[in-house]
Amino acid sequence: MGKLDVKMLRYLTSEDFRVLTAIEMGMKNHELVPALLAAQIANLRYGGVHKLLKEMCKHRLLSYERGKRYDGYRLTNTGYDYLALKVLTQRGTICSFGNQIGVGKESNIYVVANEDETPLCLKLHRLGRTCFRNIKGKRDYLQHRHSASWLYLSRIAATREFAYMKALLDRGFPVPKPIDFNRHCVVMELVEGGPLCNVNEVNNVEALYDELMDLIVRLGNHGVIHGDFNEFNIMIKNDGKPVIIDFPQMVSTEHENAEAYFQRDVNCIRDFFKRRFGYESELYPTFQDITREDCIDNEVRASGFAKQVEKEIDIFLTDLDIEYTEEKDNENIETNEKDEKETYEDCVDEVENLQSQFNDLQFQNQISKKDFDLPTQE
Ligand code: ADP
Ligand code: MG
Image 1 (cartoon, rainbow, N blue to C red):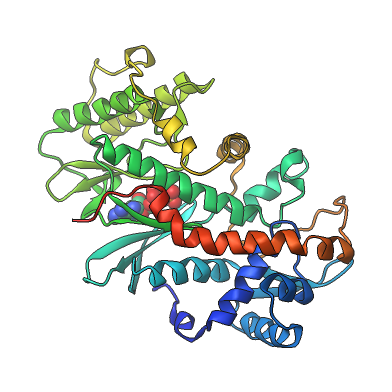
Image 2: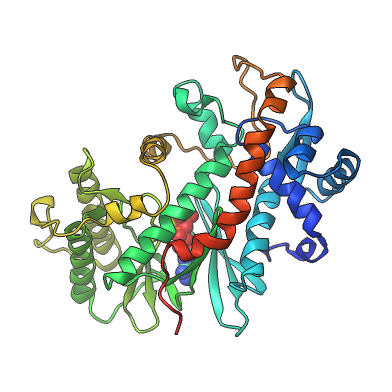
């Protein structure tokens, strides 16, 4: 686990970023983005763009691949990271980069710092192309954008996480303070402490157990279930207090399997306390204990993505649970033989549409933080 490789950020020009963003836009509808399409989206001259594209391939921000009908470019993980980090540094949210502190199954976590040198936590979501490969063929709705699915899903995961953290913090839950997000990156407060899985001794086992069960119930009262409430997603601060992290998979208490998810969260805690501390209690909450006086989910849904998207992601995340594999070779994706290949003419037809989306995206980058009505920072 090393440092985030950000040295190129300094050397990339605004034209580079324009071209990189154009590839990102093109990938919404195309497996591979031809140079000409990128030039048209970015509204730059083809000759110049061609050179920039080649240069960015050298630095592995893009990869150039051969398709059936035409060849084109694809954004790499690094390329996508750079786009988000550029925005976050431009906004002044972060200004220096430190070491990696965690690898989750769907993320990389780094320490970064803002202008005041306050250390912060940067989470880069990486919902894999590999996960997608597993469900390919089963789901119509992703067939047409499978090349972009990892961009899309990682971005949704980050947006959800940010929105949930904000809603939970507003309601007094012990969660890291969300600071900013862009694309697949979330910047949040750095919790000083470590995950519960590394804790072998606590002052008062019973009190901690009660506190965690109480949190599960309180989440339920606000209409949500964490969905992955285990010793890896509970941090214990240096003062012994728990902080909950990792929210993209949260589900509504209205979900058809809500009761099962709720029980699973409760059982995770019971099992862990038994295993680690030899602690067992007859007292544990059930789904019937929750009051649902509030519905955080509505707020999160209203905060920037359409219901349709939400539905797709729900289905996708459910699949992910079951079918996630250990493969991490994100740079290789098999092309689906049965996929109908688009022609280059299809691409050109869409240029106008993409150009307007491109402008929207530039605009969004400036306003999306405000959209969430962030509390003013102390
Ligand atoms: P994943 O979704 O990939 O499981 P998590 O959000 O659970 O990612 O984070 C993975 C690990 O990174 C955690 O177990 C924890 O050790 C560390 N981590 C995550 N968020 C923070 C934070 N805000 N402060 C300190 N460490 C964190
Ligand atoms: Mg986790």
